[in-house]
Length: 410
Image 1 (cartoon, rainbow, N blue to C red):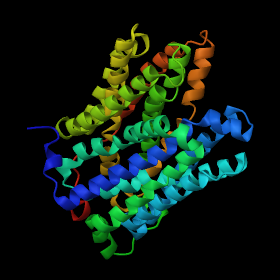
Image 2 (cartoon, rainbow, N blue to C red):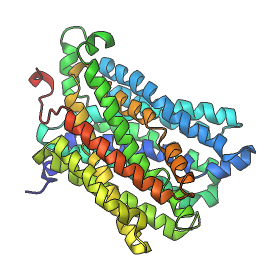
Image 3 (cartoon, rainbow, N blue to C red):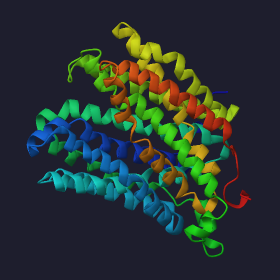
């Protein structure tokens, strides 16, 4: 039986729900990554250093936990579907407004607001999808949902490559408003989560403090786990283009550099789907631990392949493992979260972990500078240590594979 067979067993409504959640995260990531491709151009227009433009990326990441908490609580109170639509409209609106930023200050404010909206999307989309499908399909759907992030990164790279010379950086952000059209699809094809509706018909829904009673240790553990996960993914992605320039001496806009990034994203897509589905058979933690540990023997090929072909193979394989581990995250976090917090806790833990891991690029640069500017050494060492830390945290933590949702929850 194919690992992805549960996807084929979903009914039409369930497929629409999964597709909407996948597209939401894909388009959210697409909008985020557009700025990363035009940092130098934007800096020149505003007559500032590139470092000042990177503050916009930091502010987006810093705002994401706030958005996860705000929109997550709204989704737990008013339903997954309407708040997801509101969230998509808002991040598209702030993306569009970025095209008309008249100063650095305006750009920073708009990217902060975009970060608030971006922070809400993942948790709501994941909870809506997970509550709408059979338990046996969660692993495969989890891998599919998480693959939306590298798909969004790839689409942003493609849009930049094909369009920026014709429409400029501001035009890219106008294109970035197109995800708002997803709301029409959600409104027409995606119903509200039956699990949430069941809870809404029950007694008064608890407030945040009451809902969190007895779950604070779990929340702290999930934040630390997601910190390690984000160190794992950002440690393999954020400075990779710098590695291409510094260690491989590849020009910024070269076709070879683009191909290596494309291979990264293809590996991410394959890994997320495979390990997400595999977790349904062998368990969530075991699948994530295997993927994390298998990343270690791939690291020499990824950083020290010696030829572009071997480096390409390494780029593909490292993301198979990194995003393979990540592919299990949506199902794992939703299964561990209490019903009253399922719209809030997974997304908030994810985004808090992202914030705690924000030091990754700076730490890798610091390591590289102390070893003759060698980013290969810095990234390789970082990934080995983080893979071991992630495996340890997973080994120490709980698992709730297949737990019932709705009336089946205890």
